[in-house]
Each structure stands twice: as structure tokens, then as C-alpha cells.
Image 1 (cartoon, rainbow, N blue to C red):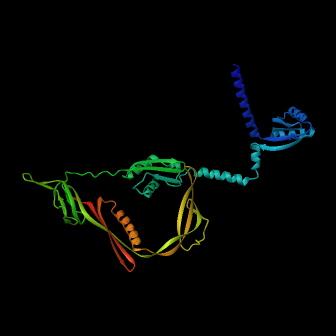
Image 2 (spheres, rainbow, N blue to C red):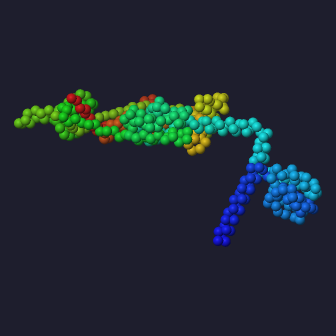
Image 3 (cartoon, rainbow, N blue to C red):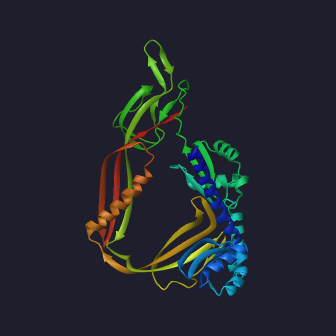
Length: 408
């Protein structure tokens, strides 16, 4: 029982201390040092006048330190004169002193208040849109669609109907398997999953032939249904019959079917380019200049209005959107413009260097052109011609490509 009572008394004591310090901070208190020969008399008079001395402790026989409520400080001056003691203020603490400190800085306080209101207002709107999960679909297409549906910079966060926009986007685009929209602060995160293209459904009851869609040389033909009208080694042209949708039996006669076959042909693709052995190139000098532009919505602030001091230069622009926290963007963009000085110089390539340079460029271009074709590369050939220090390079691919289209 004694232990419980002691614990209760201790808790009550801690609570009373917290309340006391909270009270002191709200109404303000002064930390003071009192110095004099009649310190005891000073303390006794304070007690008789109901002046509360907090955290009273003696440093010397003639010096004590204490804290006093702001409202009692006026009484203290009179008591100090009576007892011939001197009072020094060490520190003023509490809300009254804090307010008094900024009373003369009205413009600062008003500015802080206005900024707080502006920040509160702008955080009600959307200022950034993130799109994730795209591989084949261009991001600008999705951005254009959601802008028309109600998700756009400057739109009120609470006006966005996520479910409605998700359904609209799914109905509008067959290439999306899943759509998720999450509003985080002033940021909208749109997560997407692209749909896998459905295989073409073949109606085998429909009678058709297979005809050539390219000029080529047949390399291999495997017929699953129908009758082949060409063989390996045959030269064909666009529109030639490859497989006829008919089966002939000794007893059943001609029977019309849906032609099916895997037909491969050797096809040539070529790309040509030429460059001079002596070329003008740009070399970086290592000198840079940086400029800053600030965009507040559509309003632009340019801190460097003058033209560049460089005669020749490359420009790199880096844009950064400002945000208060991780997902609280504001309509302010900082654009850093870096101009990198370059000098024009002449370089003379060797034939091997220029050949490799041209071959690399032509190969990249040709690979991009045939990227959607089902093929197997058989041979690659480079044809070179050098006339008056100008090198002409022709790149030739021989590939085995799957050909043929169905025709009713």
C-alpha cells in the first residue's frame, strides 16, 4: 500500500511540475540573479507579498538565482529597493516575450502569414503527373488522354474522379490491361500494365490461298494444308501463288480448304551512305557557362538575358520541379541551362576508320528498319568505293524471312 501511495504522489508531483512550467511559458517568466547583503530579508518580503520564486538556489552568501512570473516582476523592483539588493535579468522566456519580439517586424510576420496561406491554397491542386509501366505505348499519348479526362496540372485534387477516369481509359485503349490512379499530395501517380497482343484467330473453315507479298527466292516451304505451287529455289514476285487452298484426291477429287504453310525466302536489304575522309568536327574546350530560368506556371523569370559569350556551343537543359515534401509539388520549375563551348576542327580519317564509322551507322539504321520482321540473318556484305577522298559504303543484308499473306 505504501508503495502505491508513493507512486501516486510521485505521478501527481510530476504532473504538477509539467502544469507549472506550461503555465509559466504561457504567461512568461524571467530568469534573474539577485545580489545583496540582505538576501534573506529579500526572500521573506517576496513570500509575504505573494511573489513566487521558482527554482531558487544560492550561488554565494550574497547571490541567489531564481525565476519569476512576468506579472510579479514589477513588485520585485520595489522589494529590491527596500532591501538594497540589485536584480539582474538573465533571460526572458515565454509567449508574451516572443510576441513582443516580433511586434516591430510586422512586415515579416505578415509575409510569413501570406506565404502560409498561398502554400495552403496551392497544395489543394495537382502540380505533377507521373506515369509508370509503359514500354511500347508513348507516354505523351496517355498524358493527352488523361488531360482530356480531368487529370491535368492546376486541377483541384478533390475534383478528380479516379474510378471514372480508369474506366474511360480502359474503354478508350485496347492496349491497356490494367490502370491504377493514386493521388498523393499534389502528385498523381498513374500506374499502367500494357496488354499482351491477342493472337489472330484463324477461321480454318474459310477457303483461302497464300500469295507472295515480296519479290524473293524461296528457301524453304512447309505446307500444313493446301497444295504448294512453288518449291525451294524458285524466284517469285509480289502476288504470285505460293500455296493454293485445294487438296486433290484420287477418289475424292478437288476439295477446297484453308491454306496453311510456313514459307521462307532469301531477301536482300541494303543501305547506302557516303562521307568525306576530311571532316569538320566539334571539339569541347572544357569551358562552360550556366544560366538559370524559373517558370511559375506559364510565367518565366530569366536571370541571364544576355547572349552567350561563346561563338560555338552545345546546350544542355535540366529541368527540376520544386516540391515541399516527397509528394507535394508546387507550380515552380527551375531550368538550368549549361552552354558547353566547342571549337570546329578538321579531322582526317583513315579508310579503315571511316569504313567502320559508316558501317556502324548503316547497320544501326538497317536493324531498326527490319526490327518488326521475323527473320534469320544469313549474310552481311560491305561494298566500298573511294572517289576523290569521298568514301561510299553500301551495306547489304541477306536474310531468310517468313513471307506470304492469305487471300480469299
